[in-house]
Amino acid sequence: MSASLSESRRHEVIIIGAGVSGIYQVKRLTDLGIDSIVLEGDDDLGGTWYRNRYPGARFDSESYTYGYSWSREVLDEWSWKERFSAQPENLRYLNFVADKFDLRRHMRFNARVTSMTWDDAAREWTVELQSGETYVARFVIPSLGPLSMPTLPNYPGMDEFTGKSFHTYHWPTEPVALEGKRVGVIGTGATGIQVIGELADKVGELKVFQRRPNWSSPLNNSPISDEEMADIRGRYDEIFANCAESPGGFEHVPDWRGFWKLTADERREHFDFLYSQPGFAILVANFAEIFFDEAANQEISDYIADRIRQRVDDPELAEKLIPRDHGFGMQRLPLETNYFEAYNRDNVRLVDLSDAPIEQITATGIQTTAEHHELDVIVYATGFDAITGGYDRIDIRGVDGVSLAELWHDSPRTFVGVLAHRFPNLFMVAGPQSVSGSTNFPRAIETGVDWVTDLLEHARSRGSTRVEATADAEQEWVDEVVRAHERMMFRRSKGWFTGYNSNVAGHQEGKIRYQAYFGGAPRYAARVTEIAAAGYPGLHLS
Ligand code: NAP
Image (tube, rainbow, N blue to C red; front, side, top):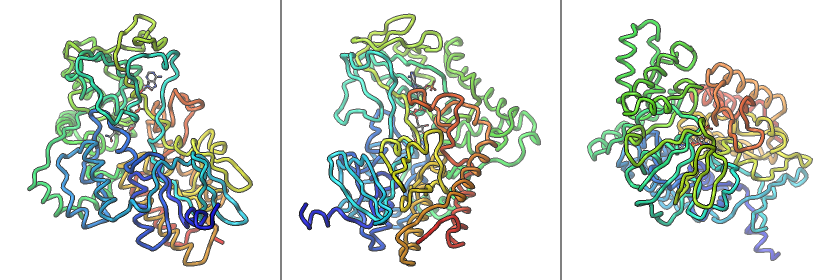
């Protein structure tokens, strides 16, 4: 290897991933004059918003609370057109930010990281790409995103289907002809529910293969006029301050009036109001008790079930769309547009897999135990190996060659979701056991990037070349994550919050993985701020 080539591959910091967190992370580091490079596996930036191009993909956080808060110029110059902006616009936004600050020159695309090895003597990481090239860096900041590892089912015959089939995360970049086509969608999570609502009136025939129904409530999207955008712009400080105080990182805040202090009529009036409100208001501006008190949760669940019955014409079908195995808000809530109305159309049919499971995928469609469904297109809206999946696919070897994937086999272990014992100089932005998995992602991402950047500056200013979480500090944080989890009723439900994914070995029902911190964004932010202010107890710097 020539000297210049080997030099060009040595950086002080490697950031993995050019999504929402990687973009902000490289901005912070390059502003400080720290030599950094972003290695991105895809052929362009944007992460989630580069990949998820399926019809109907859009924010379900208010656009202006999802956008970055850290640049007054960006806040002044960018105008959101919709309260819940769609994927093409979201990708334009990320490109606008990256181009404005000339960040692409610090990014390398088609650079998929496959392994990382820590050298304790040299105090540096060697990072290997799929291409076989290697990079060396003192610090590595994986900015992998919690939902970047899509998972497919394991049905026999999937490769034999002669029509088009793809996971929603890999929706083709070129337009897919759907008009008049027979389309099957497998999965009714937040993604499936968006796709189904969008495709119902655009395809010949739509069959929804549902294993379990999900609770869902209206997104209530609307355009943002120039006047409203001007008003939002004037209130940005207040909006972000509100988000910082809300457990979910949203503008909506919980109602603490006391569920049982109000009459049933008063509670119903509040539910009616929230059901007409945009976004997650129905969940996060609801009475706090719905998350802790079984009876309160039952009442809101009954209310939403009635709403479904009102919206779906066929009463038997409505019952099939109402979850029985978990209460409202006990899994990540999908927000919908025309989802329930889709089932009133003649060309849309629910295939209830709880009656007749899928046996196999055939050359021409899907075979259940009851019948064969002829299809031209199969859409797998089957979710992700959430939160830890992005880490598992990189062979990460720490001190003495210890494998991160093996250590995390049953459940991840971290210190504040950023560091892991025996993995020095590895700073995870919005990693497992942080709040990013459980809140409005970008709000938590900014907390993570700022904290990591401060820690890096702290280490550099002391001349420290090795930063590691102690085993005790890691254990204390894991205990806190478990305690916060145990307080929530949703610990008993299936869903990616609790690490459930039937398509990933070891992520099955009844085996909780403590992947996210559910103590709320304000508590998390206060905790990590306190740690930094105290000079990072729990970390060993040398
Ligand atoms: P998901 O919530 O995990 O849902 C996956 C769906 O696929 C479930 O209905 C699941 O059924 C079904 N499924 C999985 N494997 C199957 C199999 N082998 N056979 C039949 N059905 C199967 O995944 P997602 O919908 O992609 O959503 C993941 C997360 O992405 C969301 O919770 C959200 O955080 C994020 N997201 C965000 C937005 C947004 O911001 N606007 C939009 C979409 C997604 P079971 O329920 O029976 O497992």
